[in-house]
Length: 72
Image 1 (cartoon, helix red, strand yellow):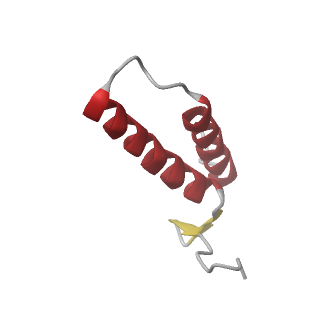
Image 2 (cartoon, rainbow, N blue to C red):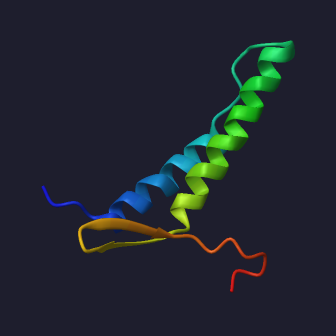
């Protein structure tokens, strides 16, 4: 099986959507807040990779993510 960087980026987009759409488990108090904070971090990480331009350069996976506020 050959590695497809675009397919990997698409999988991260799916993961970001899954994190965003999942509900909170029936936990209360500090545990609920920790779960919410972790979900926000997971979403941010997955969404960032999902927005990346992925290439393979000289056998190295390169992810380019524009972090500038205006995106350009």
